[in-house]
Image 1 (tube, rainbow, N blue to C red):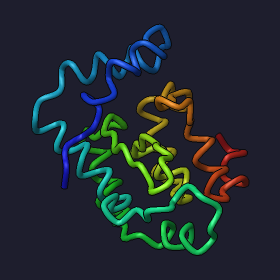
Image 2 (image 1 turned 90 degrees about the vertical axis):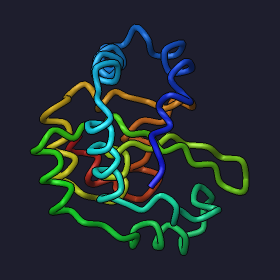
Image 3 (image 1 turned 120 degrees about the horizontal axis):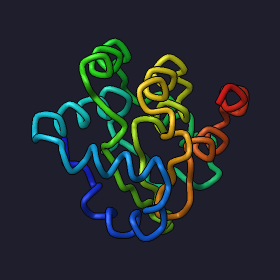
Length: 157
């Protein structure tokens, strides 16, 4: 498992979103996190998907690859327990596909894109402002839900 890419994108995020409430709250959490807390956040992300198994053309319009994404390994009971024990939406996995499309994924993005409504609810229950979060390219959790065919789930958000 790799470390969060938050430090790699932090400067850009602050330039783009530094005045937004969700970013201010995340920045406070991140600055106070211990290595153990960062590890819990990483475990949450990996309980929802194994990002090293993201397909090389994940963001193109090939339905086959999106089905593969939806079928990535998951452990939702571990994810729920981690959220109940302090995990946050602060882990970021930056993924670039073979076409140069780049996205910064968080646990919330994964749960929306894969239709894990219980996980989405738990994350937003703890940090409701995270629904407004975006990555370097202005992709929100709703964007990921629509990209991966979860329009009906997005209506709830």
